[in-house]
Image (tube, rainbow, N blue to C red; front, side, top):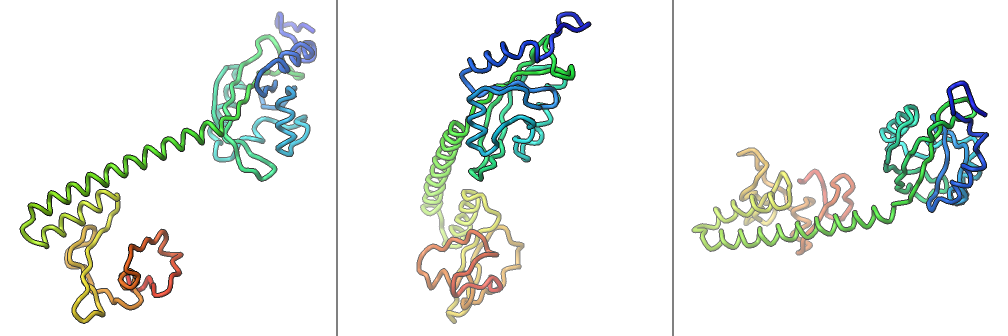
Length: 253
């Protein structure tokens, strides 16, 4: 049915042709109105919706399935749908079956001269699940970060070795050690502790991150340092507030 605006056609007039085009798409695809309401979906998208526990997409809109953390992306999509523009986006989608969000890439292409039931613009969206690709890319980035970290550690060991050769006194070598360790691990604080002759307290020999003169003695019993000494091996604490190992007390650190 033609309108007074020239060759503009309502969706219902060309629905069979548009549905056939949707089914011919190699990816999940749908036709939506300017407010994101689904007018038609192909069988690939319908099957995906069924797997996700959504069922019939009739009455739903695209924005129901964009994860809250991608609200900014949703607003961009709303804007291009209202203005009849094309665009390509990536966003997380909400999974109603509790399988976790997935990453989708979708393209929006306006359908010129075709209007929705109430005369508003409509567009085709093509969706592609890129979760596996993104996971693979993240794995590569993580591996590269690990390699950079190991390289930096090797450089730090070599640098410390050079200082050890040149150092004329143990104190200056320890001063260099805490600086190198703090820089390599990207931490604010680093210290070298010394067990005092009474075997009950420890003192900070050298440190970075603390104000000069603010190095109190540490009681061995019930402290992190004491626990480390008794373990006779490296001790890693991921979260002080959740530390529960015996012989450890945050008050003693």
